[in-house]
Image (cartoon, rainbow, N blue to C red):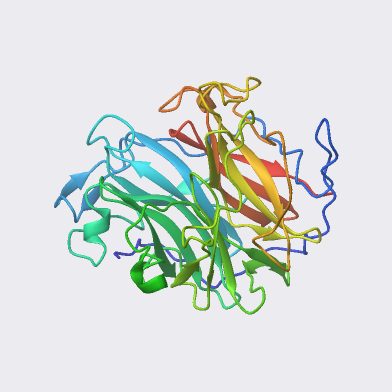
Length: 376
């Protein structure tokens, strides 16, 4: 990938460990394990919006493109050089309608986690000449999640979209700018059985160590939740090749699924990297409310709200508890307009920074915003 011309030095992540968290209970039941009480900072959001003046020479179309002209949304987030970096999905204006434009991954950095400077060019994008062309052209690279190993390797899980089939892709980087694409994480598992099936939205399990949020190993393996219609679990020894868990019939093991009558009645789509806490593994996920009789009447039909589920630390496929209500819902005008007027807060980025946790999310597939959680 072509690199952007500005300097980023060694990795330096923030302050003290934030594992010992006792959150506020939600109405109706005490969820002592859950992280609730997220607040939108006043006068800040949205933090990233479309920019018609941002031009990039596209190696797929061999022409300059206004690559973030239409919509900017669904961000990953991490820390490098004591700065928050948000890697966000941006769509050009090459077509009209969800899934018909080309998506690229942009880069924005911040000293305070609230005010961001965008780089002006994407860091991950479809290229007619690279090894991922068949899976990424013409639709592009979508919806990243990113986390870091203890030795400073960044691992991005993202969606490859060729407008025929959506598939998970893996990319790695040492600086968040120059990325190496590795293709499907499931290419080798079970003799390639799942290499070409629909797959999206992967959340690698992380932990706090020495004040840094890093990728964790459990029982000698890396673990990852993934999925949109349901949530599956996969394991890996190298972070590139992953083996999904399967049931007795050899199909994907569904550890959580949509629930009739709840906010997540249509979809349960994984959010940012999961985090190990003293209570277990918390997976933050996006629930879509069904528009029919199966939906939760307390929330707008077809809206996306955010939920949490707690898994066992010793057995990451075992569910311990799950929120019955969302901890974060669409409220602002720009969260209930754009490409998803039903309302969307689509969470994908979560980082510890200066004693607090910052949650970055897409607003109605059109903008990027932030919410802050103070564990104190």
